[in-house]
Length: 336
Image 1: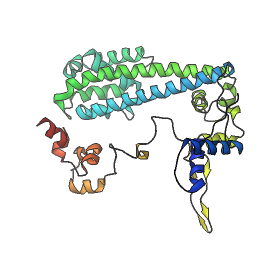
Image 2: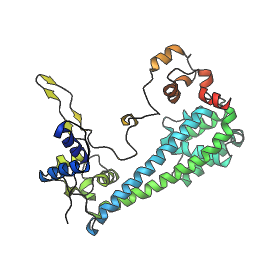
Image 3: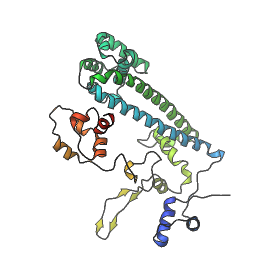
Image 4: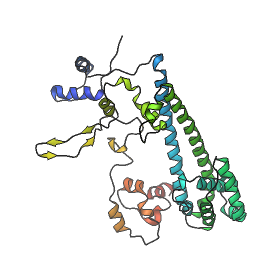
């Protein structure tokens, strides 16, 4: 028995256009779905037979890739947030520290070899520290470290800015976070290699790489979401499926700005929080200009008052910089 699918948005619009209400019953939905199917406003589902096994594998590999990218990004944000709190000088030694293999290797030497004891690392001396970083870079598959970054990070060991009392605990946590980061990157590399192999299996690797600016991994990630392109009747159907179809806005002499169609929802777990009806994390957008006028910060002072969006949103009022650099008023009340 052959099956077809009807877009839930289409049935919802048909229900509203039926009697301009949002009434919903199983009998009414069955009639509307049958009517839409008779009008051929439906589509064929992705096959589940053995001939579609490669596309099914690619879809699941794409889902796994998204999970690993989320873990990768979470590890980077955790490292950045923790270092901004206890050792901000380490983040300015490189222009893009998280893309620098030398910076990551040097940080690994600090948190793993010496257990986060910056004084112990400083007693090594610059020459021994460079050798340790060079060995860590080689272990990670690199060739030569950037000595400029190594020397700047070694000089930053003497910097006392940040919450110095929390450094031992935070650097201990960073050791585990770096391990999670390395593990996520290794798994991500393996998953992407498997996705490219599936692309070769379906015979599309040569075709997709002929497109300028599209890598095999990028093409595999796109096809993991769309599936077999032969399911679509035209290129415009693929664009609509991706939610990128241009949407015009014209009426009489008015011509609005063309935008992409937002009808296709992103995968579950990646939808913007602002689209939720109930949003406890971001109920409104604070006016940062008002915060700046209340808390004027001098040059060179840390803008702690402006780096607490969750406090601004949750309490609906500007925070006190002296208090909120360590903990919020809610935490004080809870602990008091």
